[in-house]
Amino acid sequence: MAEKHRIELDGNQHRVAVIAFGGNALLRPQDHGTQEEQFTLSWKATRWLVEIIHRGYELAIVHGNGPQVGNIMIQVEEAITKIPPQSLDVAVAQTQGSMGYMLANQLRNRFHEEQLEKEIAAVLTEVVVDREDPAFENPSKPVGPYFTAYRANLLMQEHGWQMVEDAGRGWRKVVPSPMPKDILGCHLLKRLVENGAVLVAGGGGGVPVYRDVGGYYRGVEAVIDKDYVASILAAELEADLFIMLTQVPMVAENFGRPNQRWLRRMPLAKAREMMAAHQFPPGSMGPKVQASIDFVEATGKEVLITDEDSLKQALEGKAGTFLVADGEIEYATLA
Image (cartoon, rainbow, N blue to C red; front, side):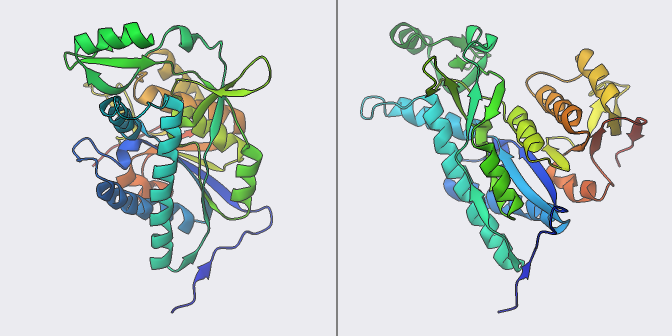
C-alpha cells in the first residue's frame, strides 16, 4: 500500500474552518429516504468536505437534520400503539448519531481513497437554551408528519400540542425555536480539533436543553437553528473561516427582482443594511446571514456563503460571497 500522507499541525499555526450545511444535503426532497441513499449522498458530500482539508484547514462540520428528524417523528406516530413515543430532543439526538455515523464512515472511506490519515469524531452535542426565551410563548417551527383535522384536534386535546394548518396539506405540530446560549463541553470539542480530528458536532442545531432552578439540565421540546449553533461553534474554535452552504452560489441583493445583483464581497455594514431592509427571508437565508454577521462581529474573520457546486472555486477566491468586517462592496456576474 502507498504510504499515507499525514497532515500535521504546525504548533499554533493551524487554520480552522467550520462548515454548516442543511439536512437536505443528505436527504433530498426527491429521494425515497432510504439509508442507502443517505450513505451515497454522504459519500458525495465528502468530495467537497475534503477540499477544505486539502487547503490546510482543520475541519468542523455542523449539519442540519430537518428531513431526518421529520421522518423519525413520522415513525413515532405510526408506531404510537406499539411503542412508547420519544420526545423531540431524543429524536434530535438520534439524528446526530445516525447522520454522524454516516458522515464519519464515508469520510474514513474518502481518506482511505485519497491516502490521508485523519481521525474523525462525531460528538453528541447538547446546546443550552433559555427556558424564558420568547420562542416558548410562540411556537412557530413545523415538525413531523401531516395530520387530518380530526387527528390534530385529538392531539391538541390529549397532549397539549400546538398545531397549524400547512397550506392545505394537513395539520402539523409546531414547536419553539429558541436561540442557543451555550454549547456544553465546547472546550473538549476545541481540543479534538486542535489535535487534528475532523469534528462532526452540533447536528440539527444540537439537542436542546435548559438548566432548571436546581441546576439540572433538562431536555426540552424545541428545535434550534443549526446556523446559529455553527456560528457559536466557529467563534469558540477561533475558526479562520466559517463556510455556510446554501442553495444558491452567492448572496444576492434584491433576489429574484429585475434589479438583482450578486455580491462577491459583502462588508458587515452592507449585510446589516440588507437585513434591516428584510432582504433575507426568515425561513431561509435570514438565519444564515444573521449567523454570519454574529461570527464576523465576534471574531473579525471571514464567512464564505456559497453552494456545494461552487465551493471548490470559492475556496480559491473565485466564487461565492465573502462576508467581511469592512472594506468595499464587490459585485459579481454569474455566467
